[in-house]
Length: 486
Figure: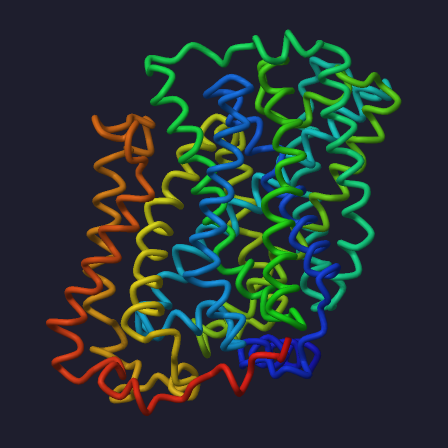
């Protein structure tokens, strides 16, 4: 009965939120987005950037990459989801169709969430190992797989907490964020205090076959892709804001300026110590006592972030995989995500940091064209207007049913954008194309998907009478129905 109730709750959360159901203030939104950003990607983004460029270039790459990614994501998904009040992947049915959206959910939820969960668990395991070494309970060269065992334990605990279905994310992050800000600021001060300004600014990343301009673009591209990976979760959380201004500013400040604090600390630490692993920075920089306290905060932060990530994506799974997902119950769906993450930990834990850029680049290859398609569909073709009812009842013959649940224009554009991205940046070897240093990979992929979706829609979808585009003037405008007043 409890599992059934939680499944119904997960389904209910995919329905449009009414103004009276939106309770998060600017402070709440800032706490949640900032807490998740720091605990999830902040340190890792900075550490990975420090393996590509020096400190000055790294600051530029972190800021412009993150700000550009959030700007594009806000226009393409966050603001539309806020206006309609719908779950992110439900809104995407207007562009991709229900089957096309479910296909993307397989990649973006069943692929991205387990990987993110694995790397967070791995970080918590590494931090635990460092704590035990600092306390003298474990030898530095111990053969016991303490980090991996602890990572699996943290992942299991996160699954148990997430399976409870408790709505504690907002309150938890209000508590955690101040600790994370202190952790980030303390680490940044420590690295400059211990090493000196000159050493930080003069430190160089590992040797690379690419020139400075190419490495700078690689670092910027990394941070654009990392930001786009917030895709569904950032959109879903936007819906809870009481006002558009509070939701948008809370999101932007939480995911850009606040996330830059740990990123800068990670960048400086990575350059000085030569390692992208956050768990290895703290004790050498601030000593055993404060370092152990920081590591404990990092473990707790990763636990809370893992719980929110696992719990927050169950509604997307239930909505897109229907009876199959419901048969497993809420806890079963959380467990499935946890099992996939555990397999990644067991089979590829050593590659999580070493191949971090590769994984993120694959995100970008899918998310960049997806963003371009949503920009074209929402801004140009639909002019910021959708019919909410068929989003939730996208049966064959309905406005957003398209062809067997797929929008051919969107799928063609997605493939074209994906190919464009790979032509400019090969993710496995991280080999950039000839013009990558001038264009990046995300922006051309977004542009290719944007224009191809427009052309295919104008000449294929709209003339066939599919997609609800000809009925634009009579479509239900969402602004006056579900968007809270300012």
